[in-house]
Length: 54
Image 1 (cartoon, rainbow, N blue to C red):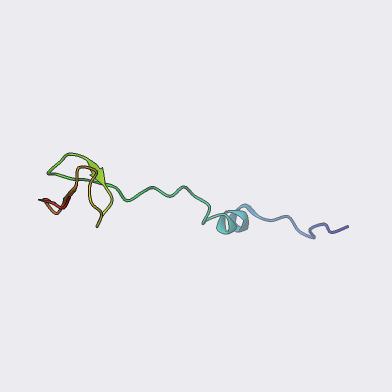
Image 2: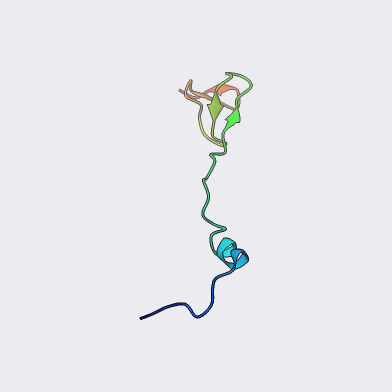
């Protein structure tokens, strides 16, 4: 049977699991429309950098 020879410490376990986390989207509040948009994307109302692109 494969059994660990030594117990994994809390530090080693947490170092291994350090990349397991929730990714929060990088949304920002558009001052012109008051809507949340992603950077370098057109807002749902069709505004980009204060101009209408639709």
